[in-house]
Length: 93
Image (cartoon, rainbow, N blue to C red; front, side):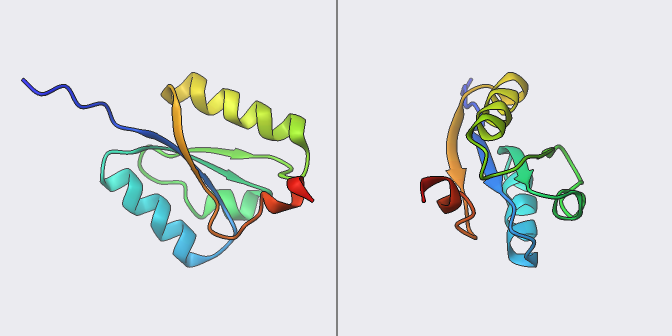
């Protein structure tokens, strides 16, 4: 019996179809996905399957940390953060 745990990933939404497809593909592969967007429109675009979706101000460190804690509470350890649109760069500036 093989014990394989699916990884937990946070995908930072950027409003593009490519990122919405990334979320879908990850879910289909068994990855536990938390999608974090800065507005409801982006979040609604990925609502399907077992996506845990959150809205947060990505430039606010407290809101980002809350999103990460919620992702971990829902899915366990977050193994990766994928940010295709480089939205988290705002926090580093």
